[in-house]
Amino acid sequence: MRNVRDSFVHFVADNIAQFSNGQTIPVVALFRSVANPDGEKFKTNSVNISFVGESLSPTVNTTIVELDVIQSDELTAVDWANSLWQLLSATFYTALKDYSQNPSAPVAQGTNIFWNVNSVGFKPIHDDYYFRYNCRLVLQSHG
Amino acid sequence: MPNPTTILAKLDKALRTYAPVDKLVYKRVYTKTGGDALIGRGQTTTSTDTLLDPQPMYRRMTRYPVGPSARAELIITGGETSLGNSFSMMFSATAMPLTDLENPNLIIVFKDTAGNEELFRVTDFEPTGFQGTDVLFIAYIQSLSGGA
Image (cartoon, rainbow over the protein chains, first blue to last red):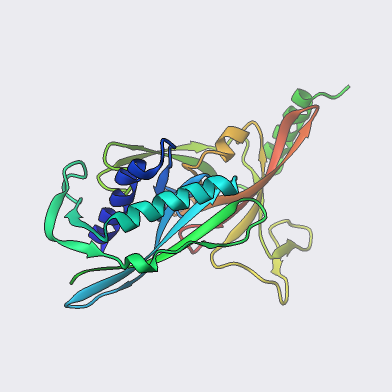
């Protein structure tokens, strides 16, 4: 499960610049940790990636991921969502890698993580303080 | 004529005199080096505890002090509470300046004489200042570890 998380987060963070039209788009992964007290809180002016569900199987594992574009400027959020769409539709899979031993040299596991390109959509969620676009995706990987 | 410095000195003196001491309150700052911060892999985490001086005053949320002692607390009937312990704390700006409260790597630690610890996250805070200088902060903290 954790390899799926790590691989997808890096897929987005490492490749979004190719589709950002020169903009810097910070990508953060949200997770709770005592040593990272605010780790699960949304970061503003960033693309936030959080994992909200796992379903394990001997054949195909399912992981639900949420991508939240949190921006103080709605039009910038539209640009960033478009960059994400271009990234997620340029391909429909990424390699599953193991980052546990050496995060700077992950080991390919010989399988991929897949998502349905037709499911990539961005839904605005109202907030009084910032603009938020939410995209929920189902990732599938070999069990 | 009062000024922020004299007010802060009086506040510190009052806190040192009256603040409860059954659990000492520390601020803990985590420092992470190496590894991959994006996915939380391979990082070395160290922490530094600093005893707050003066100690803050605090009370458990959804309770209110009754009787002659501030520690004689009573749960409010029908009161609502979040999971885990929540406290309202009054920090002197001497012990807990704004930069500490804003530090995302800082937590609050209660320690008792038996060596038990309870960890808290600062969820919100309000400053009280005088002539543009912060004198005290009322902060709301919530337990990360459960239990008391």
